[in-house]
Image 1 (spheres, rainbow over the protein chains, first blue to last red):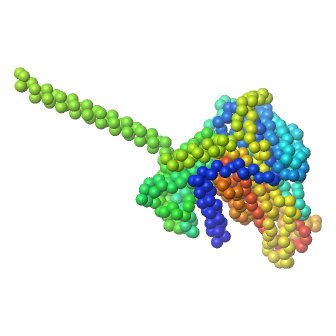
Image 2 (image 1 turned 60 degrees about the vertical axis):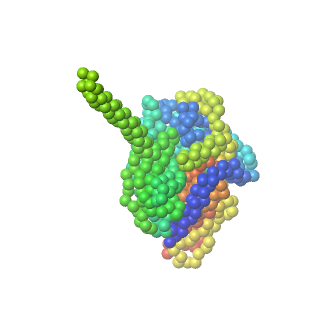
Length: 341
Length: 180
């Protein structure tokens, strides 16, 4: 019962956000809350990853063993009181579609390779400070990707029950010789379902086929529905982080008004600079049911095939016309022969 | 066609807010070239209400006790096209007295529910809440996926499972929120 309520709430939020997306409210400037607490941000990024949106907010790099990486972070006090933040690097793992930072004090490779200078920052109200993060990758470091976070952590506050806050910048560091390992993924199937309170959703199985972790995001559009209806795009609801070789579901929740179908669903997912679109014909089942999974076809391939088919069709048409003209001419020539001869 | 238009416009809107990359070369280490990111000076931020938190007392023999922790606010002014953050939560064991078995609530006996959470009007995205997540190990408290900036608040409920022989007292421990 409780979870139904939750789903209802989630749907309402989603509906609201979908409506906003449709209205294209560029309202983002007012989000700067006056008292947002302790903040951290990345101040520089490698030029090679200029076009990678993730490299603007996370430390993402590919280096050979023995490299020393230097990055800078800005730590800010967005309150009216002075704050003292501890700065350090901790490890992280990717599990069940989520990025999980380790608790403070948990040993990690990235943690042992990194130093943050200064290791703590005394911040005046509304002031910020810059810290340098040096990651010394040992010469004997094995190939592979490491995950971690640069943390700014506040001392515990409260009485008997202490609360600790930390905010950080993720690190996705790949170590190895040669060019950066490829990132890629495939979407194997789409599955339509409807919760017992009637909310439809599409679940895509996404597999990380590359050599680096991915942060999935994307949207789903429905076309060719009953009576030629179209709907969407609807955003994928979870910021799924996919570890190397992992397969995780990415879920898109849709408004209750979406009827059974069949619909042509087009799901576009991306991570870094890779984007894949797939289509499948899906039909939403009755409430509380999940439809059998449908194989997803790459939308680009389909488009490519359409172009190929069109060109082939035109060529065949021209060939037929040419043949017809040739035959017609021969016939006419044959007809002409006895008359002249 | 409409969908493509929407996506493009959203990209433009976010692009305008995205930190402008100015080519200021950095020279250090073997990843020699870096460019500087400018943008909102705040960065991803977290705050938790200062109010002293205590769990409501309960009569002897209760199997659990719950309380709300206070408002958690996460602000993301980075303006990314794919704006995602994850808040994870972890706990220590909660102890009273000398911390014998009957004077301890082990962390795996603590669960965390974020509640639905609320975002500022006009934000594009959705929060995935948590429901009775066990704090035996770090758990996802809330995840946000959206476009552009976000400010999201939630008031989590902590539930402590009690032993039949649980000793009465003021239990002390720590709850850590991590946002990245």
